[in-house]
Length: 373
Image 1 (cartoon, rainbow, N blue to C red):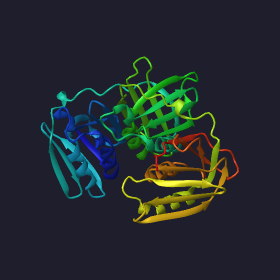
Image 2 (image 1 turned 90 degrees about the vertical axis):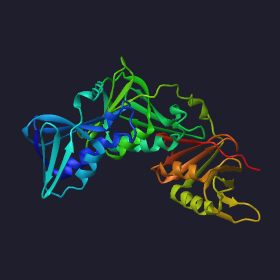
Image 3 (image 1 turned 45 degrees about the horizontal axis):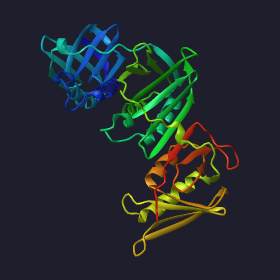
């Protein structure tokens, strides 16, 4: 194999592909990254039995070929190369990397021992990258960090015609993002459960000028694929039953308050400064004011009042401040509508564009209040 390639493009491609390589893989061969020079491109691939990553970049191919080398080491080398052209060449046992006056030699790994990459499923549909990234960010707010409950570390993605719904819950809160996309089949109906960490990873590295293609084969519903700007990821779906969440949303909310979103976030951050770790803050809705308070008697205390538009009876609810801020930060509209039934039942947060407009149902954030004395 002999290849000439742009150094920056190579470093970016290697970094993206090797992100799926685990520190302690189930099989030692999985620490490798496969490079294949063919048809004017350098194709890169890595796999950990759960997630696969494929990328390809333009290259000058003097001699085609393929090799397997240590992925993380190659990533460290390529990101440190000078900003010049890079040359890759192999003999029977080594890969030589030359850029400017820098030269590295890596031992080849036994390519025949590397597992076959999973077949990318058929195209299910596509959506513009900013819409996909926003939905992922909103839904992943409520992804659980408890690895002992894999189902809660995932995002349920429901495809129904031209609508896609992403839902996540960690039992204390629920986040649901809905967007419109272009399905390959207008009658598409499918439900998948995929790791939230993978979705975040994909969303962070998107080329926003190109669409995201989602791949899924309903005949073999175990794999979900994502394509964007030449990058292809696949993920094994999480096996398990996602909790029934639709019943958690109330049919009617007799108490509703419209609040300036940034003003509310700022007030919560200030009041929460005196709250002990994991302590809640109290939100008292009365008249056309919201009073936020935190702290205990004989300790530091804080209180702040902001103007709101309240419809319904007075009510006091308490929340984990971090959970409120994370949910509010995922809302893109300048105003937020808080919808409540009682002080102990879940509260729904929706964004709205104007203080007197209807709320948007594209993002619904549900948070369980903390019981307080």
